[in-house]
Each structure stands twice: as C-alpha cells, then as structure tokens.
Length: 69
Image 1 (cartoon, one colour):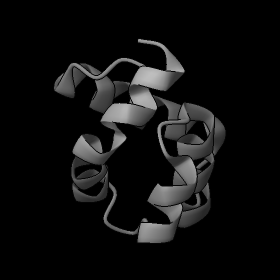
Image 2 (cartoon, rainbow, N blue to C red; image 1 turned 30 degrees about the horizontal axis):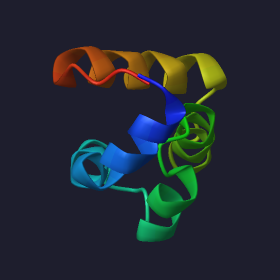
Image 3 (cartoon, rainbow, N blue to C red; image 1 turned 45 degrees about the vertical axis):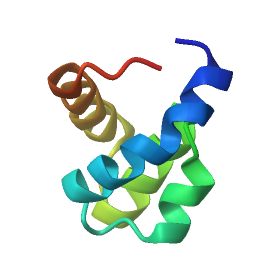
Image 4 (tube, one colour; image 1 turned 30 degrees about the vertical axis):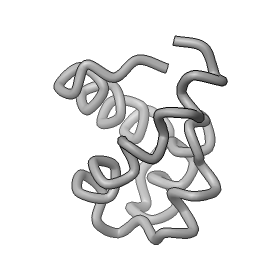
C-alpha cells in the first residue's frame, strides 16, 4: 500500500490505533497520520518502549488487522 493510500485510509484506522494503544493522544495519532515510523516513535515515547518492542507490537497489530503500510 503506498503512502497516499495509507493517508487516505488513515481516518478509518485512527480508532483502531487508539484502541490498541490507549496512551496515545489524538495529537499523537494525528502527527503519525499514516506514517509508520512516526507511529512507532509515538508508541515508544508514550509506553517507554525501545524501538524493537514498538516495532514488534505494531507488526503484530498490522498482521491482526490486515493493515499494510
């Protein structure tokens, strides 16, 4: 999925992202807006994870929701 398409579908997935990572604020999710690396960074910040842990959780979420960047 290309970045334009991700950004276009981002509104659909915003709720799912916040459901999964409840510590993320609306601003966190808005900043990420379909950009995987931004979302990983926000997850790291809010949860105190290392990059590997944030990447792992995001990958598991992507797989379970059939969401591809």
